[in-house]
Length: 502
Image (cartoon, rainbow, N blue to C red; front, side, top):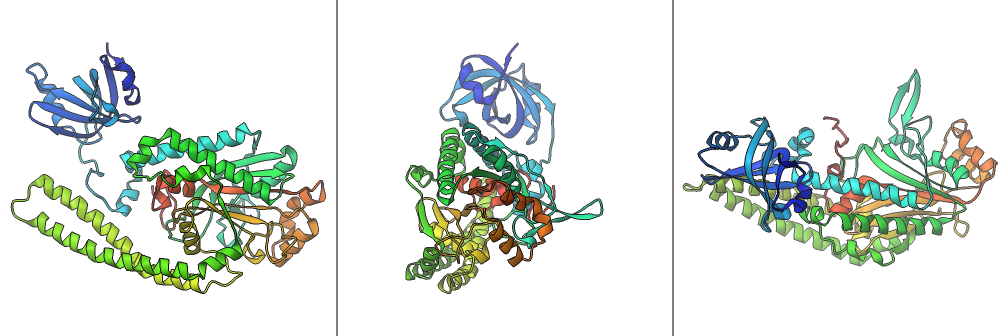
């Protein structure tokens, strides 16, 4: 009986007869040879079945299998450098477990809305498979980093009675007749645990009711939030830099094939062994108003307009070729995919042309005291070839719990970490206000209900110490690591404004 194994272990069985169980990713026939691309969750393997008089019925049945039919294949493993994964199976038997037809997601191009409507099936595609493998390693690397350094995991509540961030982004739920909110952050609770364990972290889903459709926003996302006692802002920044460097190195080491499949240029990620940049909010404001930024955005606009004309020409030429008499079926199908891709890129460039003038205006007229918006963060991030810390934002645009800076009371001791290549903020953190009177003042300024925060104020009444921490968004970080345009691909089932199915 053949030995059952998986595709990722074929290198251990060269020359041996094995059984693979999986799903049909694609197939093609050359008459006497049938090439079945089998995926089994660990990889993809080409299984080559030769037609003989003895296996004619089996060959015929396999030749008509639909995409995603489930099957078992017996065969001899052989090394084949040209094959995906470096090995293939000389098949001797094919057993169909479930034959299916009409799989909705073919190897042709599909629109974004269609793919997310079929997200439960789209997860099986090569690209989505690769992204979620990287995500799994990223999550494991995050946990290992903190566990190895003596941090204690604290599970914080999903249901909370008060805001941790902006009150306008809370999701309200009915809790036995009383209003309750889905947690925006676990930070206030890990602050309490920090005073018991010194170094703690929470890791779980968080919720923001921002009515935003940008490529960076989800309404449900995962965040890791460490908190350390006896720490000031520089300690928080040092921990964040060490943390990001290590998790990125872990992902690169574990997933070269997946990152290559995604087309990720690792040049920038390989620079993370160098110190990250540090600038203040005030310096960022000056950068945004500079001639250098204006010229950069003018160049972006000019390039986008040129690309639009080029894409329009390409689409017209491909349409003529597709509809021309004598165009073979396989060529026409290939052209359909290329046209769809070109139209998607055209829509992106047209959106850039609409948005860039607004981004130019916002940057040129940036006033001190305004929070950095998404386009501002993108500009700052693009100007740095590795991550950049932006510190000391105006207190009026930051959360009530951030500590006021002693040298300049207009700002707080906070930090955002912007990922390069325009990906923007992946970390937000601060030193926390440890003075009871100062915290009461901020709660009053924000018109927050003091009664809801009495437990939080107790942390300042009984054994208060300097402390701080940060939150890292898993999805934004994964988008940067994988070089993805939109954060919605970074989570198995995205929740965005207007999308909750499936």
